[in-house]
Length: 406
Image 1 (cartoon, one colour):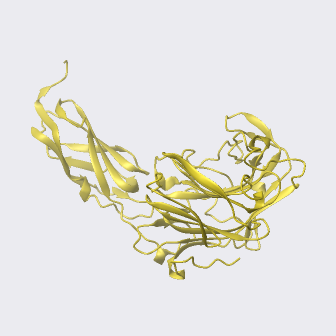
Image 2 (image 1 turned 90 degrees about the vertical axis):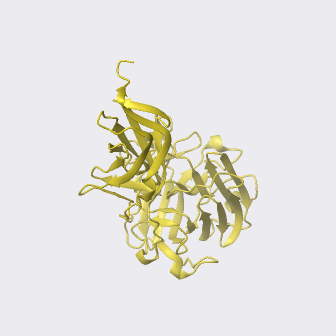
Image 3 (image 1 turned 30 degrees about the vertical axis):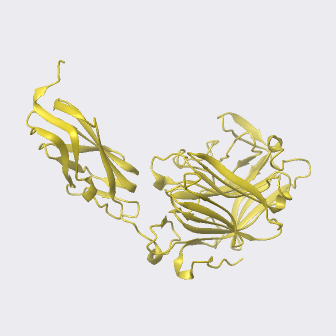
C-alpha cells in the first residue's frame, strides 16, 4: 500500500524512504538480528550469519535464505524446517523453524520523528511478527538500554490474536506496554504501524493513523539516542502459551511476513537526526555535535609532580576522532587524547610535570587540533568545542612537591 504523510506532517518532511525495489536486499539492511551490545554482530550466531533472539520462547532460528525482495516487498518467511543454531545461553540447539530477520544497525538509524511501516502480518499458531527499535551504532557505548516495540503480533489476552496490537517500551526504569484488540484482522492485508517519538519526552503508537497508546517522561525514561530498526518473523514455542499463541500441529508450513514501505518524517529544526542510504539530504535535520560537560578525576585535591589527572569531555552525540587532539591547561601542561572515538565521551590524560605552573584551580584553556586531527560526528560535521573550556575549583596543581615515596 502507498504510504502518505501522517497527520501533522507533509511530504516535504519525509527524510527517509524504503520501497524495497529490485530483487536484492538494500545496503541499509543486515539479514540478521543485532544490537549495540553485540557491536553489530549477529545475535546468538552459528558462525555462518544466522541469528535469533534465542530465548526460551523462540521456536525459530533466522537465516539469510528466508529473506527476499520482490515486487516491491520485503518477505520474511518462516518455514517448518529444523535448523541447527545457538540459543541465548550460547548452547547449540536444534530449532523447529527456519525464519528470516533484518536489522539496520550502523546504516539506517534515527533519533526522533514519525516512523511508519506498512506490513502484512502472518497468521497461524506461534506467529510473532516484530517491528522494534534498539540502540544503534550511533548510540555509542549505551549498550542495549532500550527496546521499543512498535508491534508484536500474536499476543493473546485481549481479542483474537490476529487482531491484537501489542506495544512495549523496555528501558532503565522498567517496562510498560499493553495488548489492544484493534477490531481488525491484521493478517488479512497491509496495515500501517507508526510511532511518533519525541526524544527524551514521549512516544505515541499508531495503527492506520489511529492513536493506540502514549507514554511520557513522567511515566518512564524515554530514549534520546540513535536507534536502529529490527524486523523479524519470530515464531513462539509452547513456553509462550498463556500470553501468546504457540507453534503446534495446526501452524501452517509457511508463515510470511511482508513489508512494502518504510517512511520516516522529521520536522526541520526539530533537532531530530537520521542517517541512511535512502535519506533525503536536503531534508535531514543536522545538529552540530557539541561539548555538554567536562569532568576530572580526581575531582578535587592537590596534585603533585608525577600525579595523573584524567579529563572526560562529554558531547551531545557520538563523535569520531581522527589524529591526536589535545587539551591545553592553565598550568602550562597538555592533556593528551586517550580514547572514546565512536562514543559521546572522550578521555584525555595529563601527568603533572615539575615544570608546570602552580595553580589553585586547574582549567582547560583550549582544544588543540594538530594538522590532520579532527572531532566530528558520523556525517562529518565538526564538533563545537567551545564548551570544553572550563575551570575545576578545588583541583589544585602544586608541582613544587612530589607524592613519590609517600
